[in-house]
Length: 170
Image (tube, rainbow, N blue to C red; front, side, top):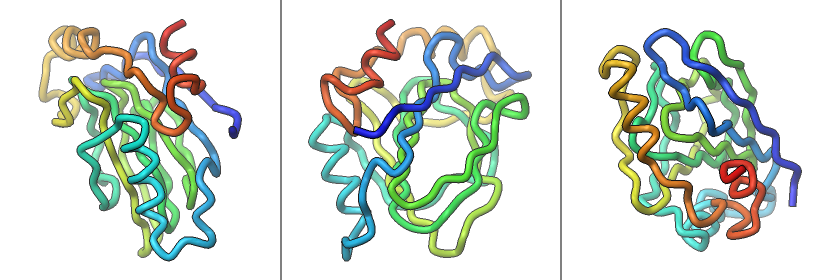
């Protein structure tokens, strides 16, 4: 189990972030080096831990957030510089094997990437994957939606006993 890094960001303008749940990063959580299909490794892992509605693609190059659902992003190939937390947040360089777990409301956007970037995303049950851009929703409405999103039963990487569950249930 790789150590979890976690970061809590306050509201930023029209990007609500999440007032109580931190962004969780697992650097090099998945060994993609010897796999012919590294995206399949993430898909299998996320599905095993109950995170579904998976997709393969990249990360939007505009700031957005999911007001009604948490999201996990696994970097299957390539590199990306990603901003989490809006303009007051932080920029992170993500590469193969890295996993980012975003709580509902966490602003994020791709700043730059390699041409071969491949991301696998997924969502826990009882959530809505729709996204909003800053200003799409009034802040109070966004915060109401965020507060209604349940804590997932399992960490998308480590299952029931994963660090995410402890961090988000504290």
